[in-house]
Length: 252
Image (tube, rainbow, N blue to C red; front, side):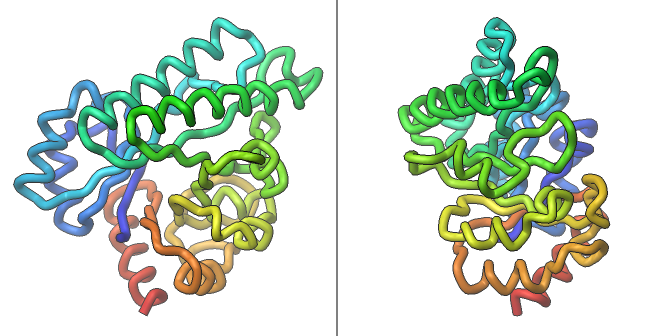
């Protein structure tokens, strides 16, 4: 199923956004922040299912949530926030949550491996928690920047090594790290997909055909080997709907 998600959506009251999204999509990946924090919108989600036939999945909160923090009180707080999101997904019967790995900050710049080690420790704990609550957790590759971990297929694979945790493949993020081919080689481990494009320099969230990422190659691999949902991540609903039309043509 093709869905949509955008950080901008959580700045509009949920019911108003729901009505607009339902005109073009049947699946919404909700970022649980601001007006769209799950504990605030349970009734709206139920209404969306009953009145619009909508489906939902969730992106865990991003703002100041660092599961790779080397400062233990902050990592513990971040873990708690993601666990609360998973718990709300369980209560609202939302089957999947996408989680970011940790990022590098503070003294972690002195030894970046520490952030990856803390991220793995956190992911293990979150995986056990999500399984206990019958919610699938997937971990997303991040865009290339000085703060990010898991921008490469090798590093994300190392983070998840020895587990059955699946990947949320983000095409735009992979493009900034020149890692699209490397991630496509892991397609059998994909549990969610985010599609948007850019020029390879920064995370622009352009329409899927507007950038240097070879979306035709990506979609060809997905058609052959992937059966999960595809989320168009956009800057607004209008461009998201335009990307959906382009994707439908590529999917044939």
